[in-house]
Length: 486
Image 1 (cartoon, rainbow, N blue to C red):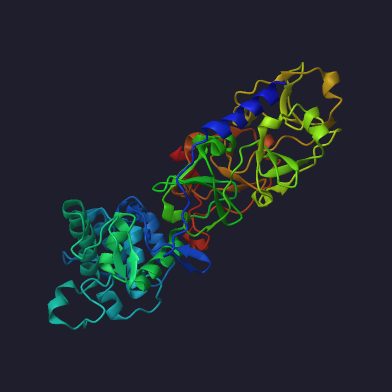
Image 2: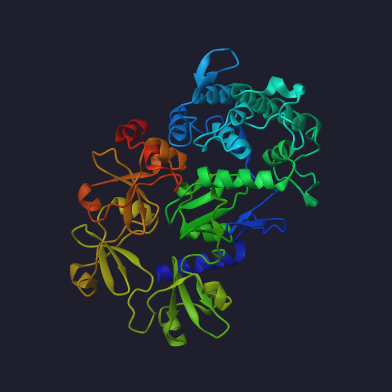
């Protein structure tokens, strides 16, 4: 009965001490962009503008090389020395501690310069739109000092770091009157910027259309494409989500999150990096919760599945307690797949870890024994649950199943190999490079080394790329880089 005691303790903890995470808000001022919510009060995060390490120089060069003409463009910098576009962007980014990604998105938003295959001289001369208002002439003598590719980047970066940021930190608002937490009218709609970045964006472009365009560019270029089964937490919002089938499902409480996820494997990312995911229903129930719907049906929650308990007699047979039941609406179970029903003939509806008299490990559930392929699985999935000693004769009474499988989101490598994979829907997807690994937010300490014989049971899928729209030529498949980074 130990497993049921643990179940009771878990459910009591769920009811009594579950602390809600930050609430999920559907902002009334948000608009739909391609079926995905654009939130005008939190367009980008502060690090999206000011993280100078947001993109490496090599990544910047390759990014430009496969888009438009900036990969081949050379022009005099402000010191009179001819340089490549990448060199100038890199110098400006490091001089003013600006994210190179933001400078790229700003140029695309203002002049479509990054992706235009035949830009005009005017597009180069006014690359970031600095100094040119909507009703101004680009021939105005008073703005000619800002003209030129290098000048435009220089002045735009200076404006954000040395003016907007210092104004907010010093006087509380930008000169234009925008500030985090301060409501202003944008196109006649009250907007309260959630952070410094959003206040700066409205100071630079005081209308929805331009900022929505910037947001769309950012999502297309820099939103991260996480493999199914990944759990991420927004750096600013503190909300944790399960990524699955193009949606992000928030966890309703810390207790639910802790019952399903190893905290060390949650990825912390900018909220803007996951803004392009559609929001799914909250995950409201902890693992092994017992639930009852208004029509009297009872279910055991097992991971992402729900298992119908055939009758009250079956409920009692397995030692479940009426006090453990959580009353929920039927709709709350809609996102759980149907697992096998729990009937009077079910054996071990809640799985256990067993060890035979030769030291072999087995996972027993629903009358089936699955061999555990490697001892590393114990610390991964059964930590704190000692194996129950079981004779070979007793084990033989259970049907032999397939080996226990690695869970989605697990990071693995074969012994002696630098190549790292992530598990997604039972397939191991190779990670293209060390840069990709780190951009996605994974941690090297979470990579599990297993014998090649264990990993050979998993098909190899497509490469993992941070952005799904990234061009093939933009990939670095250096396995040596992976080996050196760890």
